[in-house]
Length: 174
Image 1 (cartoon, one colour):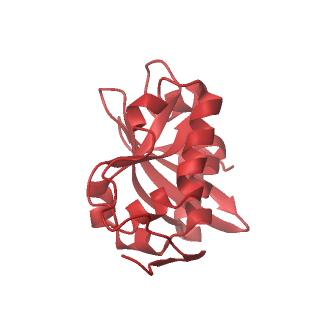
Image 2: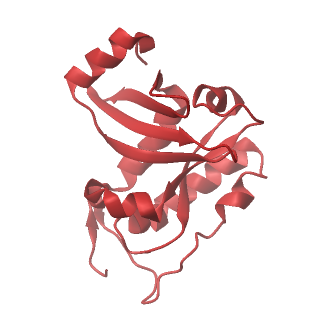
């Protein structure tokens, strides 16, 4: 994996045997105050851990990509206590080749998407969350589980056609 490149330049792999777990386990993040959660998630992204994970450099586990406060957690379909960490699983990474092209800036955008994005229901536990960043629409599909976990199932640039569809469904827009 050495020499991997994201859109923001080279990604540094810290060892020949990449660690299977993040520096801070996802479960521990949920026990921290929301402000500390956000700082830790941002640090994991900025140090390249999430980028390396999304590029397939770490083959198992999951990573935190954002933190949803209590109000947003409910909008994302979880009715329990918040805040909750938004997770990205190795299984999802394995099925989305586009993740390999995303750099740090792309992964840092996920927090803004979770904080500010318009939310469109896609069923009992699935939501599409979308924003405009520098004029371009970006979207993520989020799933909440009965156990209280929130997973990002998809993350991509959206089309204007998709945005119009979501707006018609009543999401308005960010």
